[in-house]
Image (cartoon, rainbow, N blue to C red; front, side):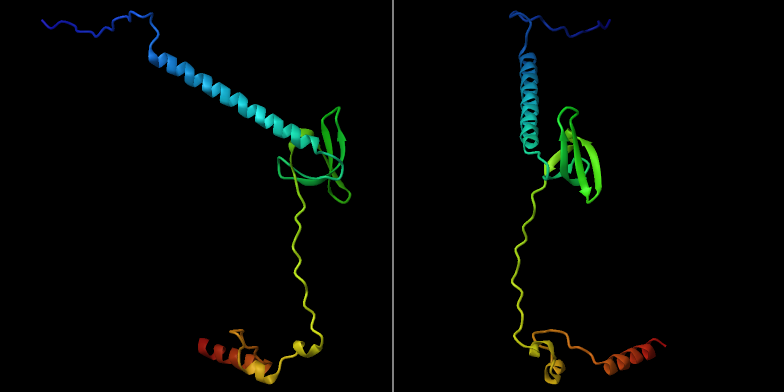
Length: 154
């Protein structure tokens, strides 16, 4: 009674390549192009970095080790790093990933008073706080405060 109904696709008259196949190959081509482009950029950056390697340069390795280049062995692709005075480590040349630039700190001039008057505290100044600065307690006041706090706890 009921016949089996099946959906059959009619073959295309144009040769069998549809638009989805073309889009798939185009996306694959773009993906491969971007992958090669990124690899080429990375290789150029690595070559530029390694051209700056010389003894005495501060560097960081890919695993976070900081040191100063002591010696470079081009034949075996090894770099001898001085981690601290007297401590060295040999790493592969490609493990060195960053040149550490020394940080130049801006020094603020130190103000030195002409006399010792600024080093002492007057009784009048210690009684009232200046510019919201905390008042300094005398030893007697500290003892009295601690004794009063002890009485509150018991």
